[in-house]
Amino acid sequence: MSETSKPKAVPEPKVLEEPGERKYLRFTRIQRAEHWVFMASFSILGLTGLVQKYASARLSESFIAGVGGIENVRQIHHIAAIVMMVVVVYHLGAVGYRLFVRRVYPTMLPGMHDVRAAIQSLAYYLGLRKTRPQQGRYTFEEKAEYWAVVWGTVIMVITGFMMWNPIATARFLPGEFIPAAKAAHGGEALLAVLAIILWHFFHVLVKTFNRSMFNGYLTEEDMLEEHPMELADIKAGVAERPTDPAKVARRRQTFFPVYAVFAGLLLLGIFAFVTFEQTALETIPPADDVEVFAPLPPTPLPTPPPTSTPSADLVLTWDGGVSELFNSKCSACHGSATQLGGLNLSSYATALEGGDTGPGIVPGDPDASQVIVKQAAGGHPGQLSPDELVQIREWIEAGAPEN
Image (cartoon, rainbow, N blue to C red):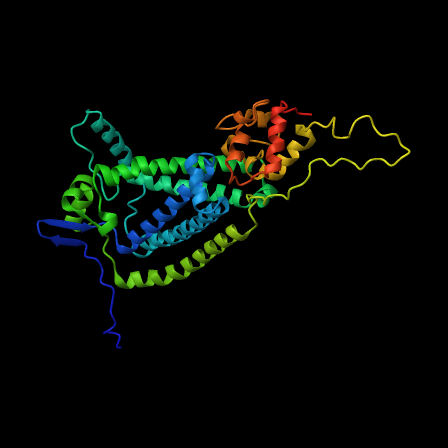
């Protein structure tokens, strides 16, 4: 096949004439593909992250059980995080190409015009102004959302590394940074999900059904409503800077080798990120059933037999077996560092205090103790054996003595 006969990709037209309306290209195919991959990874991260943050909620428990357990949820979360980081590496290259090679206007950078537009919009919605402010390719709302994503991604990567590699983190920072990272990671995730649902979906799907991420185009009516300054630049022929093909080719020869090295270093960093060490957040396998107390064999004669059997005075206590059992079965999720559902079983006082769903242990009333309620339902990640559950119930019925 000759060079001239090879099929070439047909670029999307800048302006699309259709019967009754004119449409303007807003996002290319590759930009739309980047958006959908990022959206998919963000959605999976939000779903699998929030069910871990609120693991004791009924919906979370159903979801975790549906995907085969907490380890599968974490694995899916980690894969989605890797995809998002790879998309970020690509996005940095795409932005660099547009700015350095094509020399497009940096339309996403905020400026004083955006500050004035925000004030004018507030005045418009309060009825103090009759018209909305005129804005260009990206409105101040879109710029704020974009830079919020940038900031949030940086926070999530840093805190995610600290939780993914806690041992390495503790070598350079105090151990308190790890639960602080967990709190920041979960809080930022919740904020990001709410922002997408309450802000982004409203402006894109409810306020006006913006189809540009589906077909790439906005109608002239939508452009006039949302981006009148860009529409004026397009009609005036000044929306894009004129390019010299020879200069573009020279800049491309410089850009691609530099970006290849830069992207290679970032990808090596991602590889180190995910393989640096085994995460400490691993579910401990159930321990083998052990006998908590085994009476000693009888002392051979002529020693007189004791007046009572060795087990007659034995009373199970927190210090005498209960804390060790909780530590072996429950510390991965309900230790002092993790405290899923707000429950901390590392000490007697915090066990009595309980978590988000109520007191963990109610002395004398096992049916009101959340430890018994959750364990009796079965299928818990740190499920006690039937004998162990009976012992804990008897201990609570006896008043849950500490020592």
